[in-house]
Length: 577
Image (cartoon, rainbow, N blue to C red; front, top):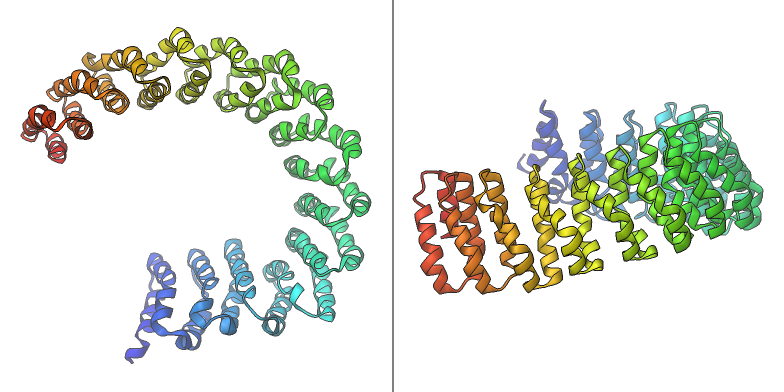
């Protein structure tokens, strides 16, 4: 009775009404299996699990996931077939997430089986699923068809191909969609096996049929297959089979299919050749940029730079750039935001003269867009523009826009500008910063949003490291410490945070003469929040100070704070001591 204890406990826990307890039990299966040993795991635990596949979806997902990593606990690959039965049952349930996880684990286990076991166990399992009465099992079968293909003998491969063809012609659209999703995987396995003629004769007709299916959910899988199949086929086969499908889906009546084409357009181009790209794919792409559905235009806008990179600069300038100009005024803010995230990557494609003359005005226009995400996306791509037109022209063109964005009503836009300042300053130099940017950067220390103030201090710390100790002490330190007497305690906290940040980048004597007195003064602040932050600051300053200074100034202050009326102040003072 004692030897059955782990399984008995598991049985009780899996029958418990508390779903969390059942879930935790499943996640401890490997521990239980180790305790049982491989033989009892096969003979007791796995049969019990076969009878337990009637639970909440979350528990079944966890079970399917655990079983995929269970080969070592049943005795290694030679005994791994013991895992197939529970996984087969899980791959037939109604919940998609459970099936997907079960199929993933089945594939994982199958890859560790011998050829004999694949033939004896996995192939019959796949056939049972493919001939299942309920469509869920047939969906799972689609993902397993290619698993054993390379390992089985030639006559059996013909059976597998016939089985897959049957799934491709299934009455249920969801099964055909699953078959289409795994068609390129089977095609790759056939090519690996040297069966190009069978691929042309049997798989390509299925590919064409699925790509023109009456259901758009099936057709859109054909778009991804075009990219995958294009890599497997010769240029002649691509021209005869893949290209007509690309033409059809690019003009598909369903916006969902056109959306997927826009997403994968750059993966399709290498398989059609430069002439077809220029004569057919370029007009199709421009059509998607003007599509009636905003979702399609958004997907196409994201691909503007990547698509243009596959064209000659002349084509990009004469055809794509005018389209980009129109999209800058698109009525959908999501389309403009998508364009803003990639438009600057056009600069290397178009070259410096065209960028200055035609692209820069569009950039400045988008910087003033009313939608914050457009401005944010654009700011994040400034480096791409800088590499083409140079920092001087960039500063001259952008400075007014940056100054305006520094006061943007959306704090995330202000934050994005702060993050960009060190890069701009490093290329412009200290003199330019002092003249043009310093007032703006110091102004952020008075921002009403805490995150902005905090990031502004870190930004100034980076600039201090960039331009050197002397510059930081003379040009920044007096300004960042100035708010320590502010009437609002939040701004006094900003000065305190700045003091600890700058202590690590200035000379030790400046820490003793400037920063330490300020922190000691703030340790007596009337607001407890300031006092306990002062205690934290003293702890951070300690490694930077001479031991004598610590004993004479820092320690007495902490000893005073440890007697404070506020418990938080006492706690952090104690930490400092």
